[in-house]
Amino acid sequence: MGRKVVITGMNIISSLGLNLEENWNNLAAGKSGVAPISLFDASNCETKIAAQVPAGFEAYASTFCKKRTAHQMTRVTAMAFVCASEAIELSGIDFNAVDRRRTAVIMGVVSTGNSSVEKGAASRNRIIKSMSNAIPAWISLHYGIEGPSYSVNTACASSAYAMGLGYDMIRSGSADIVVTGGADSTINPEEINSFNEMYALSTRNDAPRKASRPFSRDRDGFVIGEGAGIMILESEESASKRNAPVIAEFAGYAVTSEAYNIMAPKKDGEGMYETMKLALANTGVDPSEVDYINAHGTSTMLNDLYETMAIKRLFGDRAYAIPVTSSKSMMGHTIAAAGAIEAAITALSIRYQMVTPTINYDDPDPDLDLDYVPNNSRAHKINVAISNSFAFGGHNATIVLKKY
Image (cartoon, rainbow, N blue to C red; front, side):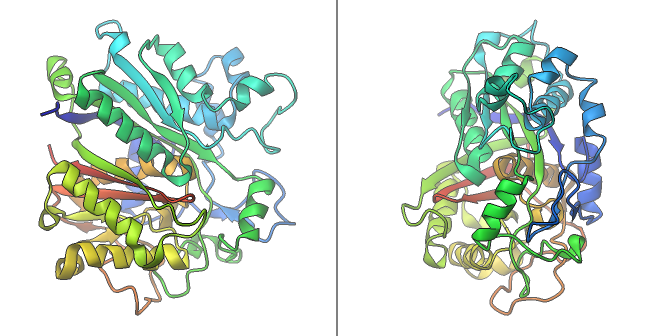
């Protein structure tokens, strides 16, 4: 039997705040981070709204990044670096007291965001800024981490895959500590326009805070978000040895490929069902033990319908008793960062025994009839929870967390 894996530190940067506490408080209050786009002139875009990281991020990041280093980082890389720095601090790791060769950095990265929006995106530093491995590299360089350091790209499931790979390293005994998660920003005209061509984004420009409407009848697409999520995974032995605080147990996961369609999920949520079922089997958890589901919940027609169908198939009649929420209703879809941010929210839900809401749930879809925790947080006993990430390309992931 492999070693138990625990979470000893976490952090979130999103449109709802620049640190873990600020994000949790705003999530619990049911606040929306969606607003008109200010990173560029979006007047010629069909979608003119997004969930941007607060304007003070650059000043905040300057306290973590040396000036020369900052010039070599994109905004996305800086988000990951700052987010990781605070997660490491919260976990209390002293890298002088642990084996740096048995520490890894695994990050979910779709791109570093070196787009037309990036300030100073001239030829200088373009190569370094654009390298998808730059995010784990900068973290490893800063802390002198000598174990494996790399990126994984599976679209919206990237950071969920990264966390799973980190779990495997600790479980197998090849690492004691893994800094893992992801970061992303696709708030630029190129990608906004491209998503609009796919009819994937909400165009509710006149009511930004109401635009992300998972599981509602009048949902019209997802809202692009940006940010970073980081988890410090650690073997139970390592955490115990240094008296580290344990937030939750990372109990297991599953990743699958639907092998169906580059964009659409498999009909009736077949792939989603198989992924959740496998994650529970891999973890030794019976469906009757699951107390909460942090859904992928994108606010698109097919995802929300199929994810609901998959949950009903797996959990049967008990599906109606399990709270199912979408964090994306408040912070938009953070793409590569989504899996880690939402797993962190799930871990906090276990810690505080509270479920954050699905906001903007004002017009129920009769085909979607689970308990989506509409609009207000709720106290709820949680011993076991799962977090779903379902990506373009058919890359699916389900993370299983337990109360420690």
